[in-house]
Length: 434
Image 1 (cartoon, rainbow, N blue to C red):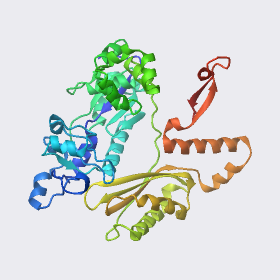
Image 2 (tube, rainbow, N blue to C red; image 1 turned 30 degrees about the horizontal axis):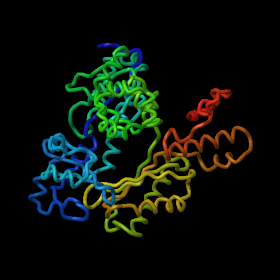
Image 3 (cartoon, rainbow, N blue to C red; image 1 turned 180 degrees about the vertical axis):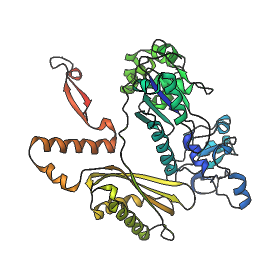
Image 4 (cartoon, helix red, strand yellow; image 1 turned 60 degrees about the horizontal axis):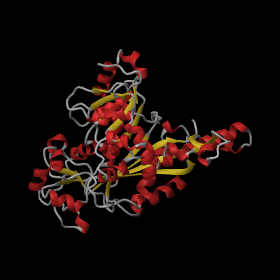
């Protein structure tokens, strides 16, 4: 195996969300009745036994994730049999059913996806990896610091393959490695067997030149470019690189500049996730499946969380409200508070507004703390006028902004070339460290 001076490992679990939904066995046969083309439900036990199978046993059939209630009617991830019929993720539901009348729709399970994906991330972290999750089923980590721990790059990749299995049964993950995140992703997508694909520093650009331009869809900054580039006749990343950075910036702006960098084998540094302690409480709601009774169940869950000894008096910054629906599937909503809270009344008021977004009656309700703030006694010190208190208050504000809108939400202005005649070259925005 070739050794990279800089090596990033990408672990790819194809159709992760679809497999998580299929594990529940709540498949729905195709149909056109219902509001705005929603699929009809299984009506008899014979039909239910026919479509239930769960897990990978269903992947030989034409499957797709059903649209969420109230959302735009577009299907989610699809199986290989559905793709063979021309059904693609993001396609309108009516068009998908027209292309594949036997399409089976699975209700999405965001709660199950989040739980199983967290178990995969923790399994990778158990081998010493500082992971950067991109989406469920796709994660990267730098392997430079793991060579001495595992002995070699090959041993590191083998450990990632063992740790990156599907939690609900199935084979190993597809693993690729390269000098950058994007090169490692290209290697993982090119895997057709259990043997990983490793791209060295010297051949990164040549390797990427033959990759399809659809790879840009795996980055949220460049996924909107896939359609326009396809209409322009750009099929590979090599053709994209030959267009030149100036032409891409003129047409697509910052996204075009990033796409050109990716096609040339360059990428931004990895940003590993910060592991937070999580607390979770769940409760079967019984007859209180909606309305004021469900809000009382939410109050019980909140009291239980605040009474947990693991909280150690800390306030709550971000929580996740989830529910298992009676009709099948699940619902999940993340709430980030404007300031760290420990008052149950204020937290309850903020979450009750999110509870009204529940698309259907719930069978169980769950509340998870994703991020903690300082203890209430420490918050009073933030009002002091000394320099340390102001710095602590700024760090807390930056953390809240990043919890809401991501790492790039908090930026600072840095003077680069104050004497330049071009205004854009005088000052640039960079992320606030810490």
